[in-house]
Image 1 (cartoon, helix red, strand yellow):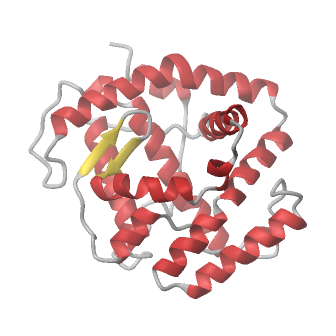
Image 2 (image 1 turned 135 degrees about the horizontal axis):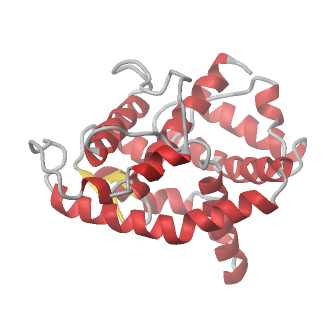
Length: 258
């Protein structure tokens, strides 16, 4: 695997880990109040949404994801994830162009064409094996490049950590994802549900042990990660550059034992 691909996987693994941590980490820290964070003026509201997301994940999404993992062979699960990742390449093309990054746009275009054809609809990530790799881009990052660099932190029901800026970019991200244009409602909603469950199943072995005030940890790390992505790494080191992640479901469950 190339260094670029390894970096890309670490970045997006970090984002996904923190997103799920946001779903999981409300209850243990709901009563903890610390000095107000300048980017989190709505902390009371955000902590309540954090707790809501945790309940939803523990009693609905996580059990379904475990069942999906149990019945789905590993090659099939990998292929499903590859397909959804491949469908995200047009979004990267659009936002790369809007950010004035023609090279990244051309790389994303090449990845989409290679994986859609040679990779049979994206089931196999042939482009990465050929070392055709780039950075994923979304409209929240585009708004950051356009000048909206800092934004207030906001925890969204179901979606987890975000900012006002990134929330505003969600409609563009939605309409730049191909499954949005599937006319049959059952097919479109079914694919959306499969995408969510597949993403959650991919995190079952990657639930981070978060120490201290879990809400504050997730918030601070997530904001740092987004700043890194918006600046393409110019604001500092990748906070998820280390591969030394030790995950244990038991550790996470212990946090809620009280």
